[in-house]
Amino acid sequence: MSTNSKDKKVQELFDVVQKKKAEIAKAEKPNWETNCSFGFGSTNTRLNLHTVVDATKLIEAYAFLLEKKERQEEAAKGLGLDFTFEWMGYSINQWKADFKTRATKINLGNEKRKLDTLEARLNGLVSKEMKEALELAEIEKLLGDN
Image (cartoon, rainbow, N blue to C red; front, side, top):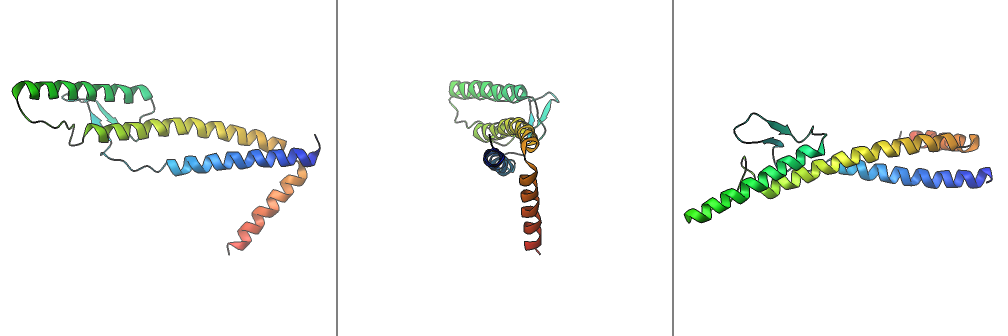
């Protein structure tokens, strides 16, 4: 493969990596629907959704809510009472949305690490001429911002 065609292919791959990184950066600024402090009832166990890294904890919390909702709705029906399930002041749909948001952020973190590795490998393939062209483009960009 000639240097020129190799550089072209490397540039195309760099563009793909940068596009994916931009998508990740955009997704890393979510709108949360709850206060992100989930509690399991009378126990002192709390989850801060901003910091959970083990997806299993999200599954456990959502399963807990599903069970609570089902049992409380069954109890209300048995007593002939109107009932709308909420947990800690938020609906199950709000909690679910925030659990999904955190799960997405966990997955994005893994994807970001993969992209960083790919970018480092691509940097190793860049020819001297392409490095110089990229550096000149960066300098031009910086001078244009002034």
